[in-house]
Length: 274
Image (cartoon, rainbow, N blue to C red; front, side, top):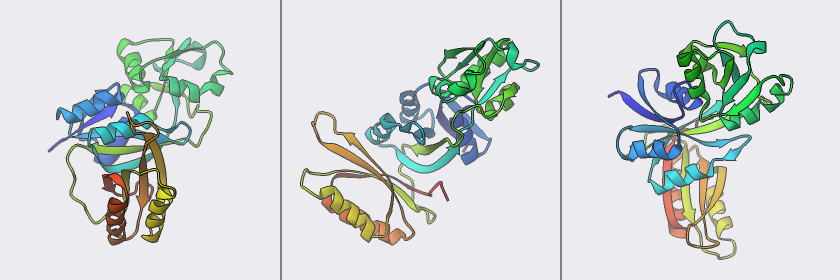
């Protein structure tokens, strides 16, 4: 069955690149201009898989996406870490001197701010999505307009790259997760898990959970807290752990289930950094 994958953004975006890296080019895309729309397409069965950015080395965690995954009972079945590269692209035959405006997502513009200090003739214009702008430039034959987008967008829409790697910070990486509504069967390759739990206000309750993870040879790679809505000063903890022995993971899971409140497994999958 052909994979129907919902992505945030348009064809040619980083979300599209992750979908293609994971499942190849024989996929059907559903382009969503927001993560809420993406989740909606999974819930109404328009898509059977979704790609969601979850954290970035510069911007940090994308907090609302943790809540979207949790509140809609989505299952994380995989992850990918993608180095983010920003390229300046326009219609073929143009040079940077010909460009009057650059349209792109606010985050992309911000991450390339230093580059444009040397090109003061260019006006920066915020837009909805990096790849969608590239698509519009090609479709409407917009001269004097450039986009900041991934290289994949230039390939798809036959644009010329005027300047490569214009981001200020060169080491910029985003973690994406693959999600679905159905609970997957566990395969032997899994070595990472995303967990969610709440704790009471007893002193040392979080430390006790962390000790369990350590005792069961879990490596804590991420911990993120979110407030519990309508319960002031109570928090849910979202934790990522890696492990070598699935039996040790099962042991840790059984103990935490007893110790914690509202314990939930968001996903068990293969570590994308290996």
